[in-house]
Image (cartoon, rainbow, N blue to C red; front, side):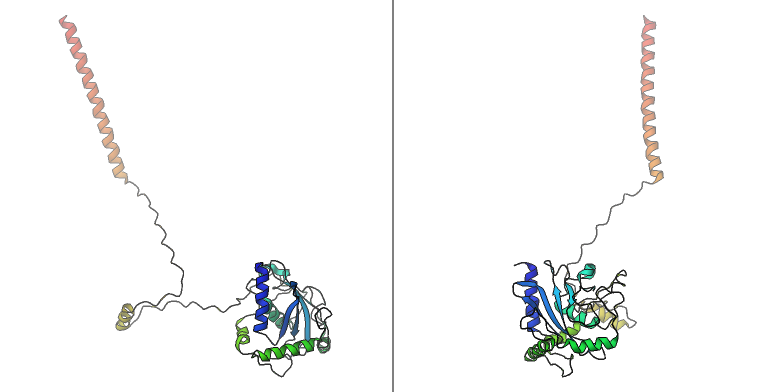
Length: 302
């Protein structure tokens, strides 16, 4: 089994074991785990989508989660075009902002929170009047997907799913579209939905927040104290264990730089060499003179 299929099976299991009352998502068939449908409750009041329940489709690439999925709404909402891929920072339109740590749960939370934002020229976005959005929100509850098994309305799907949430310990509020959970769903507050950008803002760099809460590294306490006794106590106490489990980097080798020879020493060395050479030459000359004198003396004797 490929890593992509293992990841999708894991996400499907997590969505069932830790359900959210705000959405229900599942593969369309067991033979194709790359095609999902979702049923999503609208944002809370006073949003014009507060009482709406919307249905959509998620298409995941074979290399998921290395590459992002694509999203489209099948239910008319006045906010997104029907059956057209939406340009989001979590979709295939902006692969540069996608993070493999994100998943289907994170994407649906982002979609729900982004419905109240303005389209601003976004691909797949609409700017319908508020009264039209409220009217479509009311109609969306009875919308039926022709592909999903059972062909139930959005309202029926979400009602049955919230019963599953209650059986799993999730507390669902009576108000439509609202709910809170115990256990795993409380952790959803720790997962920040990624920033979703429109096509107009896609030219600007997008900063995506971290998904998992990480422990903030605190600076070490200062050992400087105006009180000598407290300073001595701090010096005698053992240092706290480091939170960094990585091995410390070895110290960088200190480069050896040859020291320059002083000019006086160099001059002295050169003068000693030249004086030795002068003596050698003088000795050779004296020897030659002696030989010449001896030869001249022998010639005179003859």
